[in-house]
Length: 160
Image (cartoon, rainbow, N blue to C red):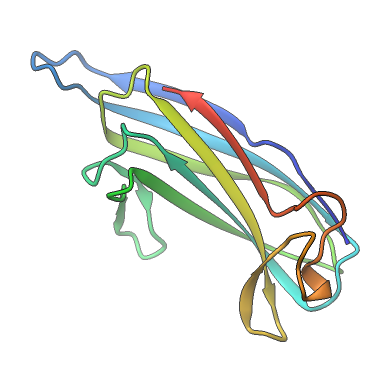
């Protein structure tokens, strides 16, 4: 199995209005472009899930960043994280695509100059296990074993 992931491309726009108080609330758009190149995988892998997390002290439980499939707003966690997932179909044991995960932040707290960490993982839906399985070089299920490196994860960082 061959797996190729490259660092996501980060596109970011900060939108803020001056606030008289010391705290500033800012909106921002962050788009992660994640190229995925999977080839030579068996029929057990039905679909692929790309998930990305952004962690920053600017993200709070009051920060919204997108909508769930059912339409409800998603909010940052107490761990200062925002998380989005995109599912992609696997066809004939391969998938070559670039997926976009678009975070639309509202209510970031004093983000300018703060660090943000990004990590993305890649999992596949195993039809035999009826479960999501991480793609790695050390996977026990041969359908999810990758060649070269650990596979299945990428990370990066940016400053707001």
